[in-house]
Image 1 (cartoon, rainbow, N blue to C red):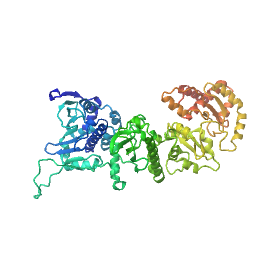
Image 2 (cartoon, rainbow, N blue to C red):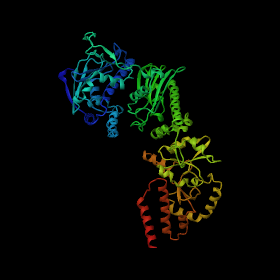
Image 3 (cartoon, helix red, strand yellow):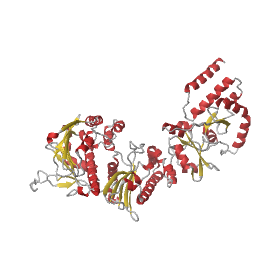
Image 4 (cartoon, rainbow, N blue to C red):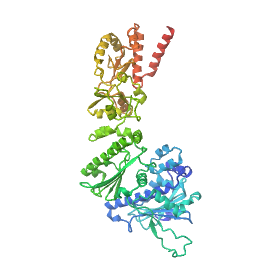
Length: 634
């Protein structure tokens, strides 16, 4: 393509919004643009290394891979040049003219108004190149894709348009030249740029080179400057995970975490481990403090960065950790896998299965150690990732017991040292002779705490776990038991086997006393409930709804319906507290219409108490108002 074929094109709407944000809003931490451009250059080099494996004709770059950064104080520019994979003309338009896959909408939603925190989100959402416009009023990109004969020039002032034209470039790679704004000329100073590179990019595995700085002006002994540029590395240029743990500072570990995760906060903790023997690999695994924006997109990008014999293979190698540990970030470098490995081969590889098992165990051990030694830190972790970890028992039978030890729950106990307790703590505090771990599932914590289903247990001083996460009922169905103690949902099954020894006798008396009342109520409510029976699980509430022991509970049913699943018709069982004044008053009601209204209201109240919505709220309100009017007239 020749220069005469230059073409001016408009930015995609989302790109315009983002560019406006970069140019006008994010000033607090402007130096992050350099981190992002060097990171992009490093990724391009990794991609070239990988491409050479399958296409040897592309050839590794002569002289080795490198990133060059040059600050020009006279012309007020800064240039970042790499000899990586480069881009074709179409790729330039796709990657720099639009933001098709960068999650821009989610990026905009995450902005908090804190400029420093907002600017740090840039890398996390894959919009790093556009951070150039924080400091530049014009950006020029010249790039040549490996294997192509021609290069492409892209230029924009960050407004509505960009220009594409042909260009000349000797080798594959990309050069990004930033023409700095008047108030950003500090980045034309080579010493300032060096300090930024050391701060953010010391861990990049390729050398980041800058021209050797000139000698001090007053150094008379110095040789006259050479016209040839002498390039020297600024960063460590050695993959951090290949170094000994004793050589690496916490600051270096944290800086590397921010590089692999695009997070702006420090990691909670990490594990750096080299395995030798049957399998040889090195892993560096991090636990984040904050959830990524796509944590709940189970089909989204996740996994470790995979290297084989120090050669980058792929981002998001999800085969090495189970789905419920998708929040873990880090690097895996294997000496055993073939360089031409694909995602399909990874799914059918016994070595991968062995590494997956070992890495999963390592992450769970990290969490166990944190829970034991730093309970407050673990509480923070649980607040962020606990719901994801609850997916574990259903997805990973092998490690079900390990995950069970890590679970945390709210409880009816008031003297907890932290907000939640473990199953082990529950068992240690069980009453003498108690053989069951009780829990109740509800839409939210307040509904669970005030659930009528746990009234009898409260009266007996028996602790109940209060579950309100959407995944809780599913979790408990897969957990089954803990420490040989059965887990029991207080809203399922009959209650004659309660821990109270007198319960069976009390229930038999209630059944005899309520035969007539139950028969009348069944006649009124038969379309809405399967059956009505007396219970001893209630002490202060008049009624509650239950389902059979192995039937789907109300919370799970609501979740499945919300997901669009067609659910079979099912009627709950209504349990009544025959000793409650309302039931005694109902039993004495001679007016059948009034009896029906009272029975319907009791059922509606039971529906509300379990956290469900009424099918006909207006009917409930009308019945209640009718009774209130009758009471005021009497």
